[in-house]
Length: 407
Image 1 (cartoon, rainbow, N blue to C red):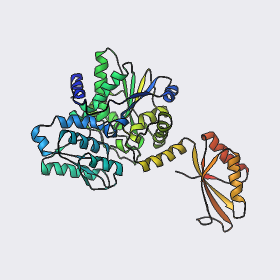
Image 2 (cartoon, rainbow, N blue to C red):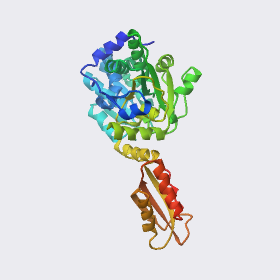
Image 3 (spheres, rainbow, N blue to C red):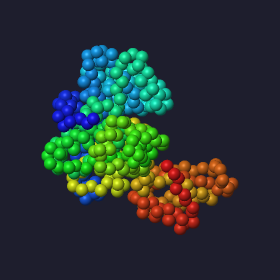
């Protein structure tokens, strides 16, 4: 089962006036890094802040009159919720969305703002998923799956048609994978369009290393459930591939790579500083793979920034982590003799090494400390890994024993 090029084109026609035709922006920084022209598809500027409105609207628009009257229900921690809520509002369909208790406030308020009834329950998204299924069975509401449905995949695939329209000469497309609905649709649409033009395009998927179900599933030839670990890229933290996306990805996607948490944090920082784009971690994994050297691109390349819905508090933490991972920020713990002038001496050494002190904590209390000893914890802004090493070496040469505090 795979949508045809005509079906993708029909879906795109149905989305006119509903979605934003998001820009394609060339990144000079990534172009210099990869040695080929690299463009960013700014789907983080899409309505609701992500690509999800494409699939949600197409899916809901194809419901029968009786299905619309029964309403729809979905479970999500963010982007799918907003996509379904807005699509339901546009089509006049009652929508109920189950979300976990810890959902970021901006996503909760946005979903309610689109007119959906929101039910908060459970510590993780597993509880809302169960409750949404029970609600659908009890009330007759149509359960809208986030990725494992042909209409959802077809709607998401309209993004692929835009890419081919905006950069007809594209040779490589890189994007994140969660359940697989987006990349399955894009791969099918792009490869069908490219084949009609007598061309080929490579599709590369990227997963967070802490939640990577596709590499092992592809190796086994069937969807496997994996044990996930916490990841900042929660938008693609899916423990098992969808059955329908998996079949399409296995056939159409050329490669799947993984990136670390540090890789993702660095990518977010680069996108903020170099591209001036606010992107959620799941939307930045394609750029993360480029920065990590995981992408061997040939010819014009596109990385899809699939969403921009990041909680400001998480953004603050991620930026700090990205600075640290890039060698531009560190916190040092330095034991000092408890006598006047030692704090000033350390500050003098750090300044002499050309680093900037951001924050200082000075205490006489702590485990393992001698009575005549204090501990200085100082956060320092540096220019990169070599500069970090210089600061630490300067302190060592002066007789101090600094240690880097883990993030």
